[in-house]
Length: 296
Image (cartoon, rainbow, N blue to C red; front, top):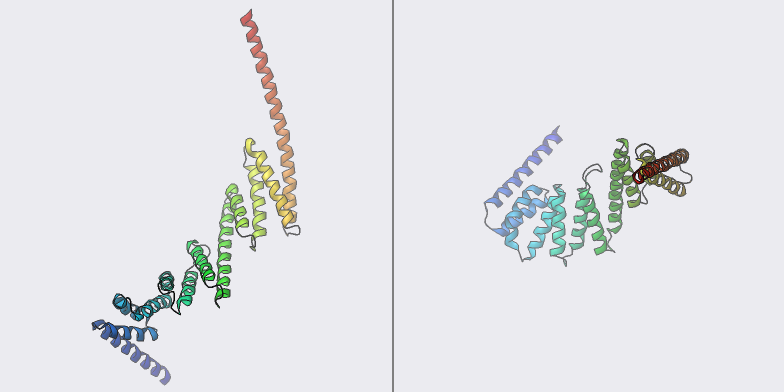
């Protein structure tokens, strides 16, 4: 109990001291004093207070050596406050503004890492995920020998997996809502965009399912033949890439059904063609009869 009281008392005294120093700086017009107190608070982890003080004096130190310290600490304070978009922006600005500073490489990495930290879950907007991948790749290109390269590549792989999962889940939504044309396109795009994805095999069998459903049950006669051919092409591609797939039996069954569908289509097409020929002959006979009547 005594230890808890002592800790609470010490914490209260520390907070009081921080607030006193902060109030002192807020009342001061001496930029050097404000810089000193802001840096003290920053080093003590009082990032919100430090940010406010740095904001007061940032323009006053432009062109001086302390300008870089203010810029770097401001970026780091935003990062520690979990304002990752702002931190990413400020770290990048630091690396561009102070390219010869010995912290420039670290700043560019932290910029990319901030965007990585700000990337949302896979089922949310993917724009920031692409931005994070671009930032990490830009860091690798700028500092190919950096000790952070392996770490950056790991983050890129993680973000790409997030994009893979999002693309796969969106395609599944199309399939589950029977939007088979959109589903087929989405699964094909996902398989092409992420050829090494762990979801690729499943995406390709989903594509086959989608194309079969579209061709067999949702196609007009004038597009049915083409869609049946597209489904067969998907079957051949799937079995070529995954001959031992756990979905092989299902794929073979779909192919058997496609063969029946094609046979039925061809028979129907012959019937339609014969009906057209018969109608043409009938129309010709009628026209000939009319012509003869006009002559007589």
